[in-house]
Length: 111
Image (spheres, rainbow, N blue to C red):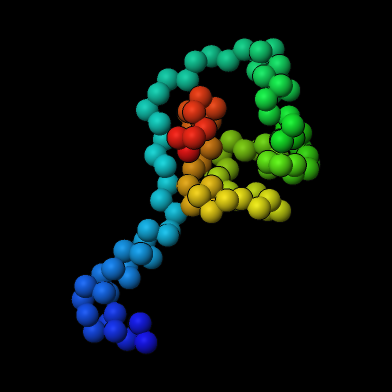
C-alpha cells in the first residue's frame, strides 16, 4: 500500500528514494594526511597492550571480540566473513589504507 501511495505522490517517492540511499554504504573518503614513519618495536608493544586482547594478526587467525587483522589493508570495512560487524561498520565502506588506519587509531570514535 505504501509503495502505491509513494508512486502517486512525488514527495513521498522522493522520500522513499532518499531513505534507500541513506541506508546504502557511503564510503569515507581517504584522509588527506601524511602518515608518520612507524617504529616496529613500539608498534608491536602497543599491539600486545591495546589490540591483541580482541584481534589476531597472523594468517588464519581466529576472530575474537574483533575480527582478525591479517590482510586488513586493502580490505573494505565490515567484510570479513564469519564476524558479526555493527551496521555502522558494514556501511562505512572504508577501504583500509595506511591513512585510514592511522586516523582510526588516533580517534576510533571518528569512524
